[in-house]
Amino acid sequence: MTHRIGIAVVGAGRWGVHLVRNFLEHPQARLVAVIDPDPERLAALNQRFDLSPAVLLTTDWSALPPPPIAEAVAIATPATTHYALITTALKQGYHVLAEKPLTLAVSESQELCRLATAQQRQLVVDHTYLFHPAVQRGRAVVQSGGLGELRYGYATRTHLVPVRPDVDALWDLAIHDIAIFNTWLGETPTQVQAQGKIWLQTRSPNHHYFPKGLADLVWVTLQYPSGFQASVHLCWLNPDKQRRLGVVGSQGTLVFDELAAEAPLTLQQGQLQPSESSLVSETDPAPTYYTPVAQRHEVLSLEPGEPLQQVCTHFLECVRDNTPSPISSGVVGTELVRVLNALTESLNQAGQPINLS
Image 1 (cartoon, one colour):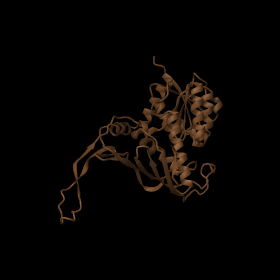
Image 2: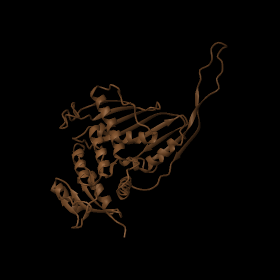
Image 3: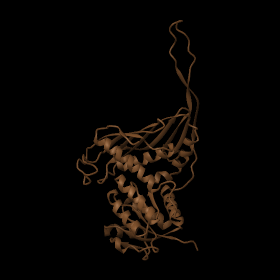
Image 4: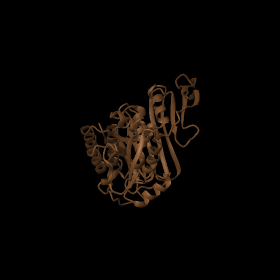
């Protein structure tokens, strides 16, 4: 009989519920506990999934079954709690799947990576988009060179609520697009800029991280070592919900539009060719005009599957083999925290460029 890995989910909020559902359904997992400080959340979860009496529902971390009964924990709590919870879990011998961002501080993320190595436990960050079939296929397209010389990228991630009280729109939303650009390009930014507006929450309980409040609108610029530049628009006060990202090259453009259910990943190939010019006079050449040529629109096929299910499967494989994640390890999570910290620094300085190299 195949060994089923004992999992405890910490946090029964919106994302924790999705984790509970996936681990309940997964043939390689055995949900042993759910921890949340709110008894009403636990009761609602129990009613929704009709949980077995064998699944412990508790508000107390100390009641968590020790290894090997529970071998791993999935942490879906506010970002400010991650460092303390992950530290405790690793020291007690659990493998950890952590909701993004890993922490809010680079030094804390680095320390967690070192602790995981010392404890010989796996630390995986739930950057769900890295497991999306469109992102995985898109990476292959970009790195194949099929787009020609890469020129620039753009992304828009907007919606109307939820407005988070713990982090701003930058930390809530940008991490997805930065992770996708990094993965598709195979590199990380060397310079970043951010400008934003605060309308709703001019004071934050996390004043240390957000001294001016929580930005509702943020414009981000990412500069990569290759010269590639990406612009990202982020807002959680926009009824025009968008989840769209593109990479433009000299031979084509790749677009990931998550909300286009029938065609989330498309390739628009073609280029501009100078039209024939004639001389207005011997000394005054006619202006050069350009014409699109070799235009072709292709909807790229994708492997079926829920991205979060792929995250859970990947995490369980890392636990089973006790090997680091090649896709979304603590090191990957730390690099994204480093970029977000630099963007926050730029945001607090009214858009001053911040060098990361």
